[in-house]
Image (cartoon, rainbow over all chains, first blue to last red; front, side, top):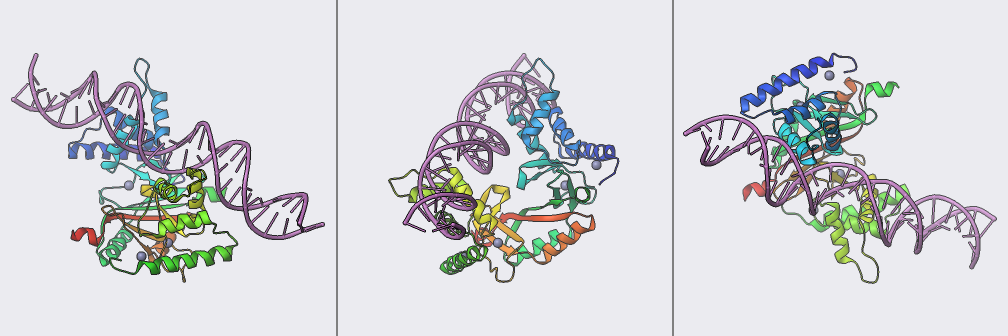
Length: 159
Length: 159
DNA sequence: CTCCTATTTGTTATATTATAACATACCACT
DNA sequence: AGTGGTATGTTATAATATAACAAATAGGAG
Ligand SMILES: [Zn+2]
Ligand SMILES: [Zn+2]
Ligand SMILES: [Zn+2]
Ligand SMILES: [Zn+2]
């Protein structure tokens, strides 16, 4: 991830979002797209109020500034569609930029750098399989799995 | 977990806590033990303010009732020692009652029932190994791993 | 034992994260 | 235009967590 053309990440993810919303009959409104674009701007997780601040900075005069429910509604919408993920261990959110052509419902493994905030998302195939098998062995029915690895990324270790 | 003598869970965990604190030169004070005992009372996760309410209910007259920092300090202490775990996806805490004779530092996999709140903790050996290998493959150094499975336990499915 | 220091606890206030509740606006379809 | 569903605006508040500082307590050095 150190060097890559991030415009491609944005391009692809935006297009996927449009298609997914269309296919599910959901509306990717201006507000929702704005929140998504804020998160797409980098592979970092942001808190809801950080997003809110950005929205307020951008906002045109002549109308009230956005309030917390505005951002939380957009986040809920994007979470439902799987376009973003929440980092439960730090109450923050990041845009999903993995290739979802094969796994629309993927188990995300997030590798979060505690030094720079970079989030590296990987899709867990074998890991998910193992968890579901283990759960089944004692009759537990899994709805949702959270896997978060906190640590230091390669770039920050080199510093 | 459906039927078991929970007194044994409490007994073992309490003894382990005493030994661990002693071996690390930390003091398991009355307050800390109280919080631990509240969490040991069941295999369920509780919020910090639920614990606080219990502490207040129990508290003897003649002195001020405990405040949030009191419970958060005790929780931090117990988390540091690995005697309890936090459910990051619901901001709650549960006592670790797995056998730690072999893995003092274990990667906890929590299976949390969204119907009854029961938490089934398993130790991830293979899963941890896989995650660390995957992280190493792109130079990420893991400090801490969070694995939480939300779903419905066998008992609640039967209802 | 007495002083000293580090740790723990008490207390007040406040920061941070998230949602409830209700009004208004918008959009698609008739 | 009328109607019903979805989306947004707005105000207030709930739920979770920590900062800051004062007081008490516990153990060791002298
Ligand atoms: Zn990128
Ligand atoms: Zn993803
Ligand atoms: Zn038990
Ligand atoms: Zn454990």
